[in-house]
Amino acid sequence: MSDARPIGVFDSGIGGLTVVREIMALLPNESIVYFGDTARVPYGTKSPEVVRSFAIQDTRFLMKHGVKMVVAACHTASSVALDDLKAAFPVPVHGVIEPGVRAALKATRNNTIGVIGTRATILTGTYERKLAALRKNVRVESRACPLFVPLVEEGWLDGDITRGTAAVYLDPLKEKGIDTLILGCTHYPLLKRVIGDFFGNGICLIDSAEETARAIRETLQSNGMESPARSDPELLFFVSDIPAHFREVGGQCLGRPLGSVHQVNLELDELSRSRNHET
Image (cartoon, rainbow, N blue to C red):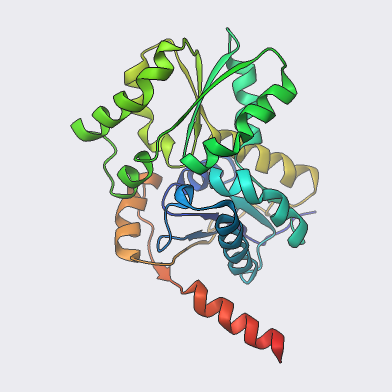
């Protein structure tokens, strides 16, 4: 069995391309449809109710493109909306939290794990609950790093400002003696070098993008949904605002040109859907 339909991936902006990059590396035959909600980035400053609404709209858009699976490549959406998405849509839905949790528990040597993420992700306590559910004696130290997302969206992946911001956010975690750090936002792997340099060799950085790609492969294999071998899988990129900037910075994320990036208006899309439903 095989399934040539694309995988759908959404995020609030550019960060989800870290997941796309890992999917492309691990599953090179898979076509991908990506939506970055750049008009409403970041999700991490929004209320849970608003994030759920955005996540449902994003997934509806991807479903219009006939995807066989949806990946919520956004930790904020994964922490507050994943169950809603699984209940509302007839395809497998993957988040980015549980794969990172499992990897962190395998990696830690002193049972002291750090988590960095957006304010919304950290406030939910999702990582603490999931880590504690799998290992009772684990100690979790969490820290919100809200400025990391706009730095990445601007393409400021290194430099004095980025390194100074990282030092302010990460120093309290360093003092707590963590040996493993979950990068709890898909934007954060793009700052791996800066974060790794700050902590030095004693830290294991958990990139949820890598772990999520492995979980996606497992789901596709176990359900006979892998794409047949081909030389030209399709990659489609959509954003809700400023496609030129997304193309420029996104190319840095993927390490290759993105090609065409299409702008869409989800509000108009939802209005049209509502009108069609009424008729």
